[in-house]
Image (cartoon, rainbow, N blue to C red; front, side, top):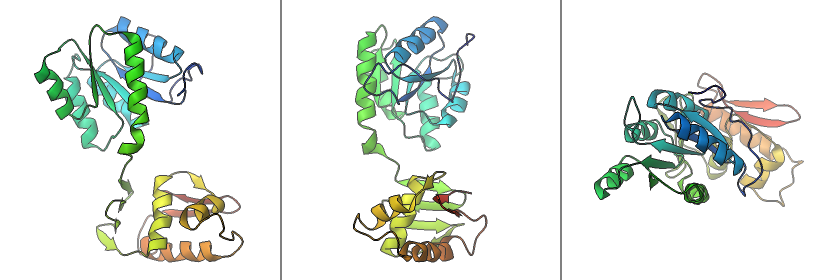
Length: 243
């Protein structure tokens, strides 16, 4: 990896040249010249770009949570498709675009089977790469996570299943709505106003203590019998879910 390049976050801030300046990319490419070219070009297009030169460093860099990945299939220490499979196995849902010199149908199918979302054959037009990445980013809400794990708390939004330490927990509709909002913003401080707008509606009176009552009920079920405590009150600010 050349001086000045980085693997993983924090991503360097790019120029506001594109319509999606906040999209964070991880480019995994062993060719130093192409890696540098892609980083410079994508940054100029408004993306925030981190790079990795091999599969091992890619797996480490991906822990920073990129919004999308560009992975070369032919890496020096592994097949890029194996890297994608490893990411999917540990729960990474960010879209993956493969770069490869192989253009056979079988190779494309193998890429999709490994968990890839798109496939671009070398040599390629840079503008096409940018267009494909933006198209993948627009599809991200369709693949939003449905399962969350915070410490030993497991929440499945699709099935409304909640477990803590392997124990299944039954929640009311309002309790689940509160937990759903908290897990979707795990690690963040969320305000009373934001919570009440999600759990109830904009006409809910924020000055009543109904939210505090609901938080206490949820705590009794998912926190009181367990360690560590996950729901934290930040006086004057709101609530935060996290170990």
